Length: 214
Image (cartoon, rainbow, N blue to C red; front, side, top):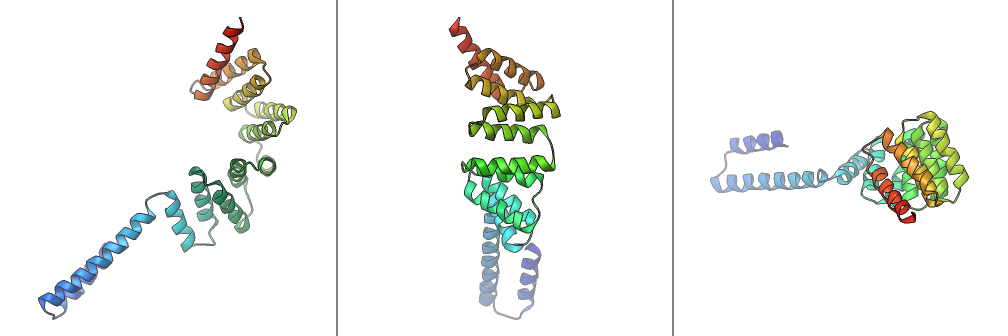
């Protein structure tokens, strides 16, 4: 933009015109430059405008649609995120990452069955502790407690150091009013990750309830 502006100014300078006309021409150039700068600032004002602009310019690029959908999700615009991930799936075969993020958008919309199916599809592509904890989360939300525990057992077998497994198991046990077992799971989560703030808070809550029982 700066280069084009300098070229335009140099071209105007070379013209044999009066000072008043020259001033008017330069003013017009600066006005156009200001408009272009303003429009560019809008585009770069955040992730959503940036990727909306990218999608507009490259509507067949799956990456642009993916990033836009993710930007929508981070702003809690879950319906738009869900539609964006659907568009990505139309442009290319869904991979592990797309299925994970798409499932989270479904979960945000309370489409729990759809989210569970996508997590399971992701697990078929890559077996990770993370995806099985997400499967457990959806099972629990749908009242499938036994299935949730089974998914967490798989997650632990895949990666015993993954703290979220113990965090989720502790929440399940706490929901069943098995507070001593929940306390143990929260401690295991913190042993794996001492900085897990949610585990710290839940452990404190459980310990408070246990003291009140005594």
